[in-house]
Amino acid sequence: MGESLLDRFELEGFRVQWSRTAEQAASLLDSQPFDAVVSDVRLPDGSGEQLFESRQRAPVALPPWLFITAFASVDRAVAMLQAGARDYVTKPFDIAELVDKVRVAVGQCEAAHPPTKPAVDVTLGASSAMQTLADQSRRVARRTRTVLITGESGVGKEVLARHLHAQAHPHGTAPFVAVNCGAIPETLIEVALFGHERGAFTGADRQRRGYVEQAEGGTLFLDEIAELTPALQVRLLRVLQDRQVQRLGAETTITVDLRVTCATHRDLHELVQQGRFREDLYYRIHVVHLKVPPLRDRPDDVLWLAQRFLQDEARERSEPVRRLTPAARAALLGHAWPGNVRELRNRVERACVMSELREVDAADLFEDRQASASPAELPTLEAFVADVEKAYLSAVLQRFKGRVGLAAQALGISRKTLWEKSKRYDLRPDD
Ligand SMILES: Nc1ncnc2c1ncn2[C@@H]1O[C@H](COP(=O)(O)OP(=O)(O)O)[C@@H](O)[C@H]1O
Ligand SMILES: [Mg+2]
Image (cartoon, rainbow, N blue to C red; front, side):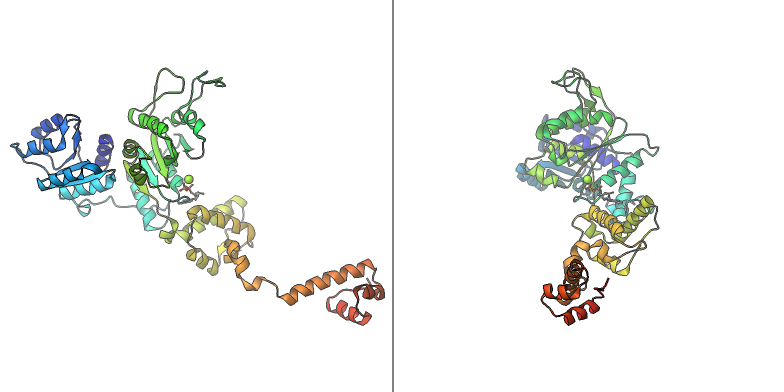
């Protein structure tokens, strides 16, 4: 956790010193002034309270003090507030929450810390939410090696991961290795990630590099990270901490240099509280947390994305770019997008197949919804019966080779009625 906090606070522009023990912290505090202290309650060589209390008696001024505590010892943290500590957070906490508290403690609120002027960047979307994400990713892409991306399925988490990768490696030769942890069977994923030596197990007739090694120098994108088993969470933590990977059956480890971007549509914080996701891994991967909002919360992106997908389709088929009719625009804006951008893309692609060459209408985009809903598209009973009658008369006339008398007899109607009907339906018995 210490390392994650160090990374994040440095990213936020703080100068940070990290002490691993109470003793180290005490001598650091003696040696120079600090604007704030963040301390765990339990320390390897004592407690945070003891350290805090001894510093209150020290001759140098006591900086604002924030505690990190387990939920079970909140009462101790509250006692420390009464004793003069500034604030506390309970584990598992969101790093952003701690950063905010520290900013407040040092009297530096967000406004006093001017954000780098966001250049308009429309690679991710036109909405202000996506502009903010683009701005954040530009700031962090090169400066951090671990990023967590969360958001509903289909919002564009992988798109954002690739965008971060492209910004960290603008010259485009570094590998981007995407692994869906939920899609690979549990029995295979370990070998897939970490590789194996020749002879590591029956059938391992040659050595294989895992995805971690394949991402060397670039980015490993771990999608659906919440699906990793506890054993694999431990192994992944080791890769992230030590930057070392050990192939299955290997005796030595290999040093790797890579960025790791993780994604999930689940609430990791809640999974940590339920004991289903390791807390230490949680801190390791969420140094920077980027949240992609669902499409329904960023209506400004709907038409922008639709336009983009229409252009992609046109390019792929070497056709002119189709125009959205006003009804199509209204329908797109009125839809709730449960499947997010993925659904929008699928609908636009299908509409391009279904529609006329120049225009896409609402019915092309939402044919599933309109088929049963629009009365204009269903024939009336009269029209339907007429179609059937015409088809049957035509078939019977053909069978009797146009001999009206025989056909009328078979149909049980008079010659005169058959003539009249044939005329109405434009059937020519003589032919
Ligand atoms: N900002 C975007 N620009 C263009 N296409 C996008 C954008 N966001 C998502 N998509 C498209 O939507 C689909 C789902 O995106 P993906 O990144 O796989 O979502 P997630 O990983 O969140 O499920 C993909 O086809 C992707 O190309
Ligand atoms: Mg995905």
